[in-house]
Image 1: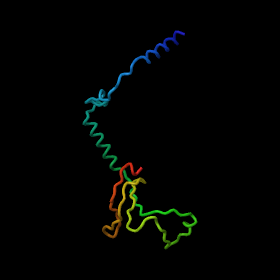
Image 2: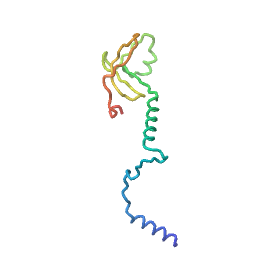
Image 3: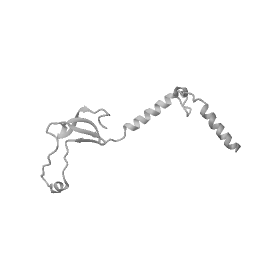
Image 4: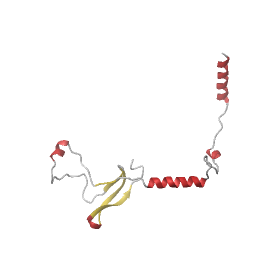
Length: 128
C-alpha cells in the first residue's frame, strides 16, 4: 500500500513540475560527440556528398505512349505502326528513375546518334 502512495506522489510531482524550454543551440559545441571538430564533420559530409554523386540514375526520354488492349498488342507484327499520343516536334518527357524531371527536344549528335536537349526543368513539387 505504501508503494502505491509513493507512485501516486511521484506522478503528482511530475505533473506539477514545469517543463523547461530547450533550445538546440544549448547543445552546440566545438567538440563533436566523437571528440572531433566541426571541420571533421564538414569533411564527413563532403565524403557522403561525393558518395551520393556516384550513385547511378536511370534516365529515360519518353517520345510518347499509348494504351491498347492486349488483343491489339498480340496482332502487332513487323512493320506495324503504333500511333502515339504526341505530335511531331512536341517536347518529350525526361525521367530520372521514373520521376519526371524535365522536358526536352530530340537532337541528333555525332555519328547520327540521338540525344535530348533539355528545354524545361521541372520543379520538385511538379514532379511528385
